Image (cartoon, rainbow, N blue to C red):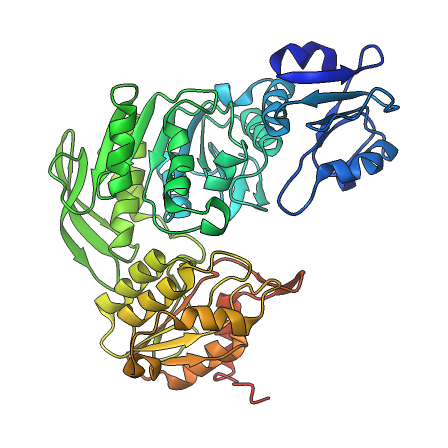
Length: 497
């Protein structure tokens, strides 16, 4: 593709091009630069791509795009732009020939539930061979599956994935849309047919600074400021922020609403909810009538997720009978209330819950079917929002009998400092006696098993599907599910060192 031909599509400030410049790849990481590439020097919170311009040049890129003025004497092709991420998104869409417009794309945002709703939605709409997926756990592109490296990848990666879905004859695609993804313009110019709002609670305040700012970013998905306009919105009426979104978009979008709390005006609402250790059932009211729904997922919080996924399927023209038949065969989401069974006489569940709200929901799930004591093992991530740490401790204390606080992904922060922040959620001496602090996560899980008796339930929260811990810049292999299974098979193996 000729760079000169796309300059009219972006807001550039200055340029220095030596004749016609053709590029054959889009590069955002200098370590992956190849001859013929077009390098975008992106300035981030941790790294500044402008630092690596010379490395990219040495590797054979043909031009640099940056917000920095490189100067008339810079001995290379460059374009200075007002917003490098916006330019990246626009040029990526052009480079891959607008593959998003050949797909029916559903974007799902919310603090909790995005992974469950997108993976369940994919299952309901036809499965991974015909329905693409971009999310926290994996990227499905029709004929193959790739491991996910972030929930919402860079815009160039999104358009490349959409291109591969199109080539694999996918008809639909679901994408988890994170607040970082919106704010960093990773989904700008992506044509979404349907946008879905699940909920909003405290998370990522280290990045957004305030809850209002966090919501403002989420809301952009529904207002058309990302360069495209969706045809339809699906919104949770049980969340006050969902009500605000409805008021904001007004009649600009067709809307379907859902409620797990019996909101009378919802298009999809659940009543007569029955929860058990085997699954969930409820009476569904939807635009064509009422019908009984049952499925194997656990917990009250998943009622809202199921309603959202059913609304997605219904909006795409699927019959409710077909959707409910598919729902019964959904095996669940890796690391979301996932059972670990290695012959023990107590329940073990692994969940991704890593906010106060999510821990509350997961804790309520185990309360619903546990006759014995409820034990939770969890930690808080290092170098992230410190304000949510006491909220997570509070939620754990409110929903369990024993709390074992441990490491999550400490990153470069000391575990002692993280523990001190968590302690702010303990409100009495009696509560303090119910909390045990164990730095090593494996030892913490082993100790929970030592405490457990028949009919007890242990919830290991925070990491879910993740297979590593981030510690001092290193990624250390660690999978809660595997560790738990190994410990049980070895009859707990508590390390006394």
